Amino acid sequence: MGKSLLLALIMGPCLAADTLSPPADRALAHEIFKQIIEIKSGFTTGSTTPVADALAAHLKAAGFPPSDIFIGGAAPHKANLVVRYHGSGALKPLLLLAHSDVVEAKREDWSFDPFQFTEHDGYFYGRGTSDDKAQAAVWIANLIRYKREGFKPNRDIIVAITADEEGGGPFNGVDWLIKNHRELIDADLCLNEGGWGEMSGGKRISNDVQVSEKYVANFRLEVHNKGGHSSMPVPDNAIYHLAAGLERLSHFSFPIQTNEVTRTYAEKMSKIQTGSLADDFRKAAAGDADALQRIAGASPAWNASLRTTCVATQLEGGHAMNALPQLAAATVNCRILPDDTLENVQTRLDKVLADSEIKLKVIGEVKRGPSSPLRPDLMAAISRATDSLWPSVPVLPMMVPGATDGLYLRAARIPTYGVQGFFMERDDVRAHGRDERMSVNGFYEGQTFLYQLVKLLSTPQ
Image 1 (cartoon, one colour):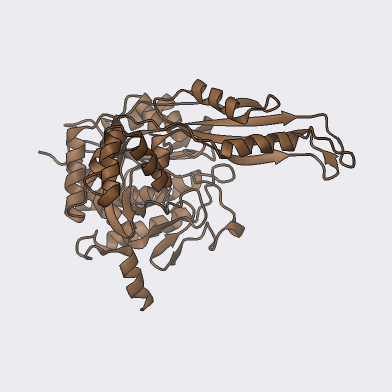
Image 2 (cartoon, helix red, strand yellow):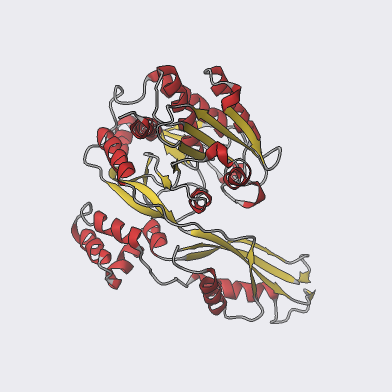
């Protein structure tokens, strides 16, 4: 079997070329995508300002006046870009959000250079291809297309490409804009990352819309010890204390909890799946504990949607090869269900670690936001755009296992929805990991979907 035929079978049916955005608009999206992937905007070592400058150059070349383009942020190397496309003002603005920073990546960990845009076997590879530079490139390319076509929306369309979503903190672009320039991004609603098209075995299952999300808490675990010479070891070793506690944590699972969003997701998924899995989703929607456990065990994504999770992500310890360690420490990253409390999570962690030598403290400020309402007008528009490209693929509300900048906007009373139209295999999501990628066809389909969705939400009636 030829490679191209095999890839076609894996990827599933593609949209006809005349269904996608025009070739020139696809070429522009590709150009922007490649350009910003190759800008090293890692959260800790990179800068988002070159991304903002590059995108602003595309906008100015397309005729956007400088007065409608804002570049600024909490630090010179952490700039955000905000651009406004003016409409009639009949409705409050629509905000389109994406972030320009990415998780760090090391060349030695990857099959390809993570900061080179590589096309291989039907995929675009590079850090940020799925999180979140694809959506940033599409928002800008589509906005330029609206201007070229002379589209007259019934509301202003605002695109914000922001800094430091991945780690939050003092340079987070959305938080900074809300506090310092809310007028630039104030909107009726926001479309953001956090939702995606769900595939299994190459088959499109659903187009998921994020209306709720977990919140993040990072804990630092520390064990201090007097240390000593390594030639005279003792049982009371800081590394051993920490390692034993982390081993206990690795076998622990928080209890399953459902909420309105996850119950709705299960009820709708019961009509999509077949066989025993469909039956389990039907029972799970009604609260059956055994069915919920089976669903959690069937997919890491489903498991993460049904319970709070805490996992060790960083380690440090010791000060010399020939000395007993005086410090052993770890970072534990927790993604907490909206109805769970930070205090409850910390209490459970203390019990699981089961060692008074392990001191636990929260790193930084913990922020959380409310869910967004399931607006009928929005869900109808998403369903209409979805059906035009992928007939019979249903639209499902979801609670994303991770976290997004939607939490800042929701807390500021700007309802935010994660919707992208980029389809990905549910058990091969590579964001934050090795060989992050986006399917070539999926990128252009998502471009077309988001173009149509924004027009539906901004077309005079």
